[in-house]
Image 1 (cartoon, one colour):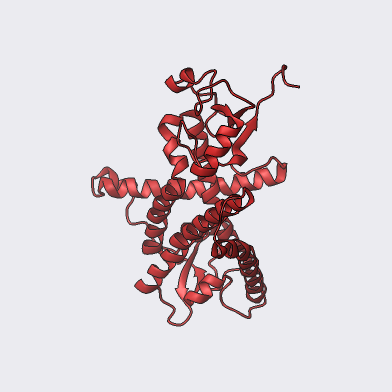
Image 2: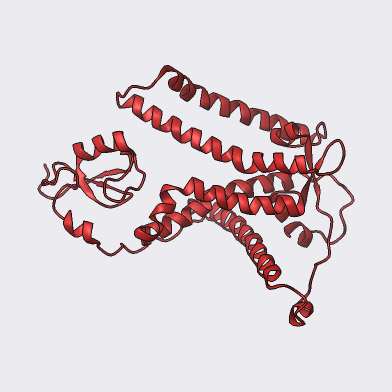
Length: 318
């Protein structure tokens, strides 16, 4: 763990510093966009194989996050990011971590972020429909207007908690932990359950070896994510975990079929417009109408919006 390597002497203070808890929060937020960057890269390189991951990425990440966070909460009493920094959760009242605390922590760490992301995407779609003249109910319009204010209020409450935690006024730094009645403390040192000698003598099950190896890989991945974030912040390179642009995929049957015609009207494209998520070229009016009603590429079925359209200009254009 990062904190174990950083401290030469045992920690006397039970309460972690603000910088440690913020580092754990930052790492936890990093996982979603970093893994999505990898999924986008794979889908661009092999759209027929990994295209479904792009369309259902939120559900894929929900399963991945449920497995990882569920294990760390059950085994160590904290999220992967918290355990990586040598922190664990404990009740502010009983100084224990009960099954009820585990269940609520899992809901807050896994299910609540998933629900918020889905709500934000719904609001973005409703806002786009309203701007394009489509009917949107009054309740949906109100929700779209209130969501930014709700997020701003939550960020303000988080800031107040940070200041209070730094001033030793409160024992928890996050509103979610305060609601659950939990705080963060240092993870106690624990001996390894098996050694390489035990493995060579066949005293350890293969499943235990694979499980430990997988979890160590996750922790190392967390370290490299933090390193990449620091490196790109220092070098001003750009987005986190930026990957190289892959080579264009090989042409499939649909690419040959729709080489010179719009895949929707099957006529020569009028105002040729490419859809960036798939690369197919359509008539501007055809693809805009289709995206407003369906929200996905007509050929590949990848999710898309009008913001993914790119105009194509040739030398013949005035």
